[in-house]
Structure formats: structure tokens, C-alpha cells
Image: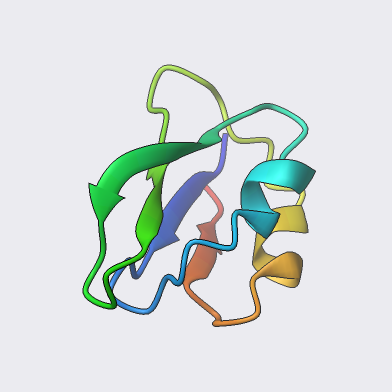
Length: 68
């Protein structure tokens, strides 16, 4: 099982990562990040498969996949 590590201070709330996650591990939240945009939330109840789709889609390089 892989884990997602995200730097939400760089997130601008485009939610491209949410759109491409096949396991819906990433979900939109109502929380605002450092830039004043809604950020992504990691749903810890779901298992990341480590496909890297979110990492590849993030234009701000906020996401890192950690193999576990």
C-alpha cells in the first residue's frame, strides 16, 4: 500500500488530482490553504494503490507518492 504526502501550502485547489484518482483517496475539502483556495483532503480510510496519477496531474508539484 502506498501513501500520499501533500504540501497543501502550494495547493491552488484545481482538484485535478481528485479527478484522476481511481480510488477516490483525494477529495475536495472546505478548508482553505495558504493561498486562500480550497485544498484537497486525503481520505485515510481508502487505500492508495500508488498509481501516481495525482502526482502526474498536479501542476504545482504538491503531491508525493511514498511506496509502503
